[in-house]
Length: 407
Image (cartoon, rainbow, N blue to C red; front, side, top):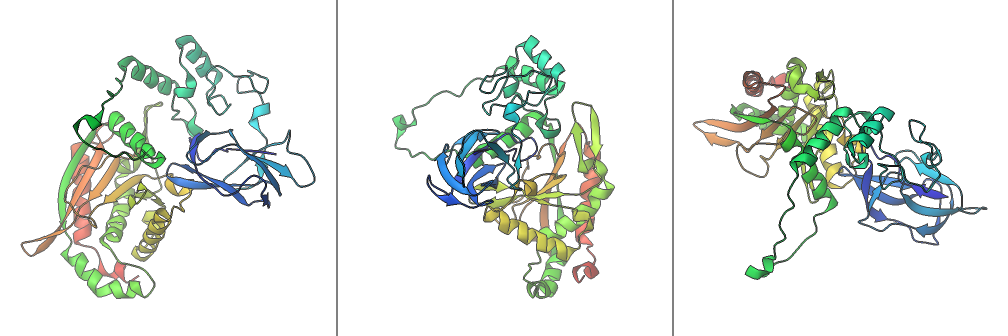
């Protein structure tokens, strides 16, 4: 039996082998995790689809693997390993029929082992309609190098257009420099995690016209509430923090200021106004910045938010987040106050249209001022929108009802 890499998450067609938990000759049970693959800052377990013996491991830690790529060959109990292909879900051990034996969309049948024009390294054609494939052939575009923005990573005409514009601009390669000419150096790997962060930041910065609005809120009353009510939270193993207050106020604002909770569908030229509030929480870990999502924040009490914040942070730092934990965010909060610093300009997490940056509060003239920075996509939002939004955020923090803390 061949165990191949499944689709780890919507639009995710590759990952990095993080850990291999078995060796050739090992006997494994059905559903036992044989290796772990890291993708989008989450680690997905890949299970054995049946009991048997590991015949061969085709990858090693650090390898980049694509959907459909062969990972492990397993000899089943009472049978051989040849001819049976199983593509398993990292969240469900049940095998699915292999797409390797099926013709790609549009009827372009092929014999296993042959390559189709534009086919990725995984052995699968990129997800695109026959008309998009025809367009790509006529324009000489390799679809395997075009990031898809449609459902499931599907390639749209707009994706092809953007890719052509990028090729025409021609990004110049960075010059090769021998830094040892000026002194001694050490090198460390640009890890898959940092590469994922870099790609996301570059993509957002290049494609979204950022504007950042700065303000401050007097959080002295909130700090007093933390001193008064913090012990009741601690009895439940929780911690009452400024971050919890910020998310509680912010979640209610997002139900009113719908455009801050939206995404721009560039292909259809529509603004998608979401009726759910899923707030991404930037968490600093040893591996880098990870943004798990706190779902339905507008329906949660301050106590529930505090509990979820703690659970998500622990999962992020122990690398136990799933791909699902990192998807579906509508707005992001980056709080650097626990480390230091004041105002900063946070980069929007595409396809969201805004992000809130929170700095460290400072005492001033009998008040305790909390720096706030709202970066927004100027294609969707104007400065007046951001000014009204930030003004109400400040008012909500400065006038937080004490009764909510005790719920």
